[in-house]
Length: 169
Image 1 (cartoon, helix red, strand yellow):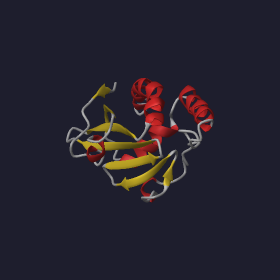
Image 2 (tube, one colour; image 1 turned 45 degrees about the vertical axis):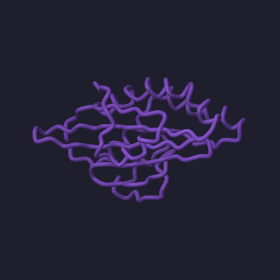
Image 3 (cartoon, helix red, strand yellow; image 1 turned 90 degrees about the vertical axis):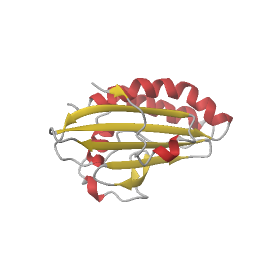
């Protein structure tokens, strides 16, 4: 089961969190199978429940009326691609990769109305477990960004624990 957590101060996302209007972090303990952070992120996104992906399709249709970009599907991940092959600047599903190390990935989607940053941090422990923390921060730039976040923030708080729970499966 995942639980609410503070955004880790040693995470790459911490600097973005100080300027963000929306901050959210969830953590889960898993058996440490040695997979890097990117492997956990790819699994998180590709195993998103269908109804969540359908909400993303609806989001894309609605925001198109306001001239905002269609991000595609959350699950649009290449399952054959090796996690370590992703390089900064590349797209990973709906996000652009900013950093990729064994223990942390930082991704973003920046637009004229808001900037979204997401980090997945893996912390290994000597007992054969690891803690996976997923942090999301959003900085809005204008009224459209703030309006957009009104329905998105509660949905994110609902979806994040469901998505993280699927990492156990």
